[in-house]
Length: 256
Image 1 (tube, rainbow, N blue to C red):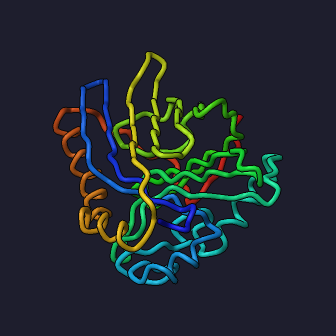
Image 2: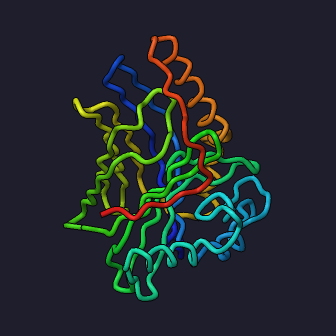
């Protein structure tokens, strides 16, 4: 048994596009849900996993938050204060892909912020594009039972095949024995795209992490290859390109 509240989620990512042409793909993945208070203990207990250092698998602060290598916990708490959210010394957990041999691309990472009574108080959706840009949507949690629901306008250029004038509906389960993250993107005339991540919880220890790595030894490279391959498929279907007019580095928006 693992002594960590951090864990592995093994599952898949699914994309389904409805218009102007139908398009679908799915691939197997695994993610880590990392309690940021445990990250240094993880590298001590798992010898092929490192924190801010190169290894077979690793986690770097610079891949998230302010992306300058500084404390992610401090960055999250600073933004929670701006949003008038107090977690009172609670826990921050981050769902993300680890680095594989020093490389990672996280299209979506999610910070779950709990108070000391383990009540979910806020969720931060950290979205990246292939231009090394990032936008984070910060929501106060409106948790009822196990379901988390959020919605907002799109504020960040992600796909060269989707207009900016769209909006997101986020529907996700509170992380437990499973995760189910569903993002529906709509335009003014209805559903445009659904992206979903499913995962089953596995204890985070050396044996289980090694097994997931051996199942997906080139996962980071596969993800970035799949993004470009699927973009090529969309282009061959005649879907028009949308120009990227605004270049950003790292933005955050406080959502309702």
